[in-house]
Figure (cartoon, one colour):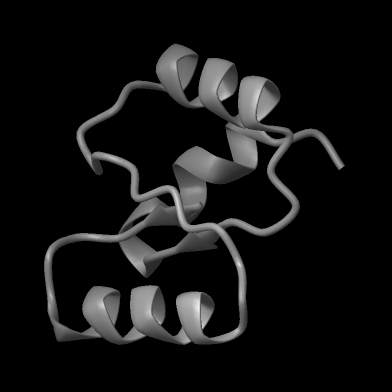
Length: 64
């Protein structure tokens, strides 16, 4: 899953994950906490790439 703002970095990350044979789920950076919780649980995500601006939000969503 990719939670990145639209940028060259997000395109490169997307292509790198596809090249590695992974399924990529791009997420809207405007999603709220409850929306992200649902998506992470429903998709059973194994990897989540997050931009530095969403780091604090992700820490409240993901339980390690």
